[in-house]
Amino acid sequence: MRVVVLGAGFGGLEVTTRLSDELGDGADVVLIDRSEGFVFGFSKLDVMFGRAVPAGVHHPYA
Image 1 (cartoon, rainbow, N blue to C red):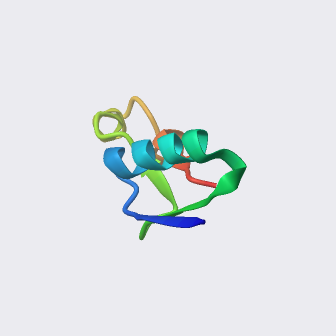
Image 2: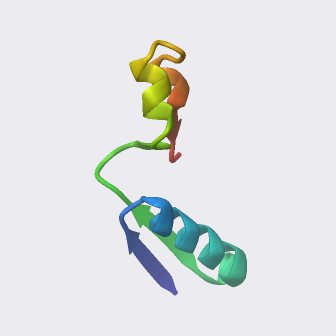
């Protein structure tokens, strides 16, 4: 079985993780998003005010 999840916001990440855990090796769960990683919303403020650098708050999907 193959499951494709479109969009890697909070919902997409959560459903992908849960499906992978529940279905295990019985399914190929694929996450598709237009970007290569995730930046938690509040982390953007840390970058804006100089408390962090962009690379430090970017979490790659792969």
